[in-house]
Picture 1: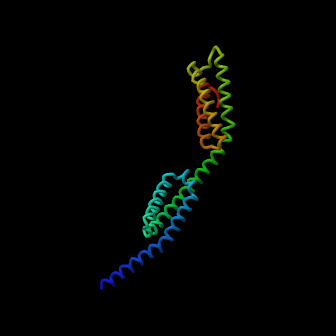
Picture 2: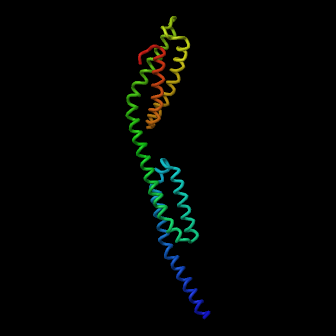
Picture 3: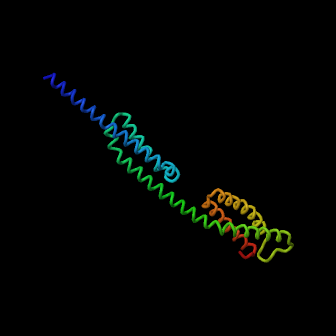
Length: 198
């Protein structure tokens, strides 16, 4: 009796080991496939969905830990959720990339008129400030303080415009337009304060 139960246990153990070995290859392949899918989107995800990528990486690490412990059943059970997370990450990153590209294209279109109008406005203000600085009588509505503010405004606008131009040169039209629009708004205010037509 003892002998037969020993053989039964040995047989069950062998079946269990074979069963585990049978699960090892699919588990290994499932992890490799998941890693490959994640590698394909890693660059985009790093840029557009870093937090979500971090969560997926943590999930993958957990699955690899189970594999390292020989728990192939747990690996195979966790793979569908991991694959869903990778698929969701891909969708999010792709959508955000498309949004960013659309915003950049829109900004690039807006940069054209700004890059032509703003330097003219700044030059006109600069010229007006020079003329008024040399004048003994300021026009009605323009005080010495207004003129001083306009003078320092010209310097700050030139500096910001330089940043905007550099951003445009490097292809970052979103930043370029944001800074360029700020200069345009400031120029309009200064022109108004100096009694100029914008």
